[in-house]
Image 1 (cartoon, protein in one colour):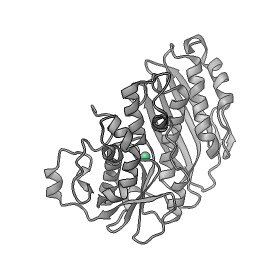
Image 2 (cartoon, helix red, strand yellow):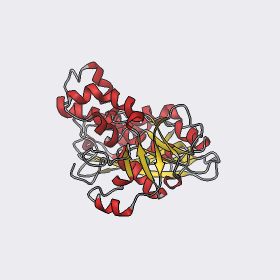
Image 3 (cartoon, helix red, strand yellow):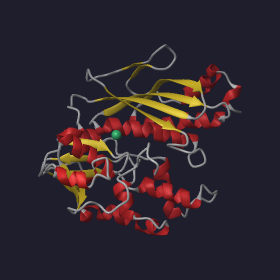
Image 4 (cartoon, protein in one colour):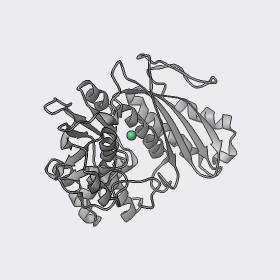
Length: 339
Ligand SMILES: [Mg+2]
């Protein structure tokens, strides 16, 4: 059955029972609006959108995969502020020919991602339209913490990362190479495809980093170089990554990168959508166990050098590898770019 054969009420009646209630939900779906507890007296809010053909293709991701990813990329944004996510609202634009089962899969993927974290899906909207669009708004609670911003990194701070680097990019490359065949990729590669379809960021490391005194933090959605460039720009500093510190992350990708004729280091530096957390800490600070050191914060770069390297528009020259501009193509995933 396709969604064009159901009324909005009929489709909602099938979706709603699948959605997670959440531990902070005081009033869930069914009224004009939901009511969610905000124990801190403030709430963190962010929003994100997934567009078919731009952020996913139905051949490579199930409805449940899309629901999972739509949830996780929002939950990661809240975690990156040092907060615990509490609730989502989800709006879906659906062409008439989309299978109802695909949409119910989205609800299941949202539930699988949110349920274990106590996050409720408390409302949203449905509309017909020319392409599938999933728009998610997330709310979170800081539990008295100051939000960790992009602008707090200082020269001498250490740069640390928690989660995966380049695994989603490897999974996408495998899907491009092999397609979503019934047999799937070779078993050792299945984890990479899963990382692409269902990124599973270390959400609890966000509040843990805030408690431990992180000076800046982001989730890595567009690639390490690009996102660290944003921290560097906001903080008025530079970042020097260490190839020795990144070695273990590169090694994890070596075999699959060779099979795909790609660069493992390139995936680590520019692969997006793993949604791990990158943070900075004052020198000598004890950062939470999930984080690994990957580099150090330096002073603001020489502006003349920045202009000379003007081909990298998003702060690329603010981020170096062993003191040199990284020799990889592009500085990260750009949703509006041609790559
Ligand atoms: Mg983010």
